[in-house]
Length: 390
Image (tube, rainbow, N blue to C red; front, side):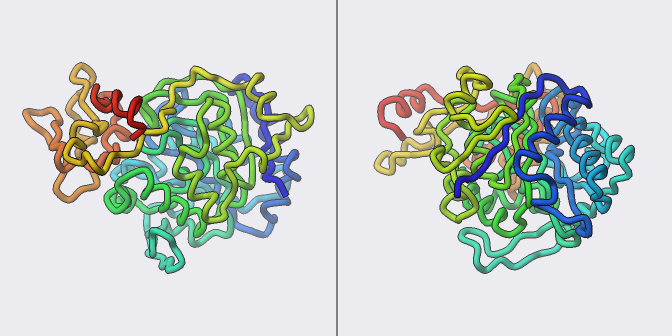
């Protein structure tokens, strides 16, 4: 049986338009009752990476969150909660949600915050890369998760969507520690695969009305994609996102290991795209919603290296760097570094790097509120990627 991905057009964040798009997407998949029951406690799990305005396209838009909550309530699902573990664990979950506009929507719908402020270690001996996780207690206390992810780029994994959004179930500073334990895209993708096997959200709804391209997941540029996507298969959902932006889904580690671990599929011949007008081919969907110029890393050699020239690796690495004109010296990037001996430190009131210690997790770039950190590829690396397919 093919994995179904619903795709519905939505041009603006107007409540009536978003409510229709979300409702139509879920109905195309069989309705809410296909995934949850009224007697279950349900967590709505948006992307709350940072306390940013909805217009930045960094977090799940409050209108999408509100639409899901409202439609569930209207369908008789009253036992609703929300939560996420923000990128900066020093800022409270509800504070971050308030800055993103999510808390206001939740309060209007009388949806309480689940406990994402405490964690508990959970053994996972069957894991392929991770044998345990420290999960937020709210995740353990409730019955089901509905994953409300954002369509964005990511400096480590190329894109962040349904699979990656489950990382917000990991408690606080343990997210940074995970970057230290799984320091490259391949290892991190394996860990995200294990996490999805453990927490298993019932349904995934992607806010792609206004996406983020370029220097994501926080410092990129908003760009319209005009879609709401939904699926029970997070790998298929992320793979459709990839195809809409002309990216091979099999270059994304979370897709690769999601398929390998049996979570879902990234093969387009195993995915059925359903719309309000009927079933579409991926080519037809791309002609309607696709963006071939979407700024995302497409190079197949993005993560590799030539073992035989390992001594050149420092010259081939993609490195984060400070855009001095943007930096205000807040030090959030230093707090975000997951290493005990920081790869980034404050020097004369401004951050500076110890590149030999840097594990290229890009947590500093991810959490910078001023868009003052970008990632550069050396000229040698660009030549190598083009000619040697690293």
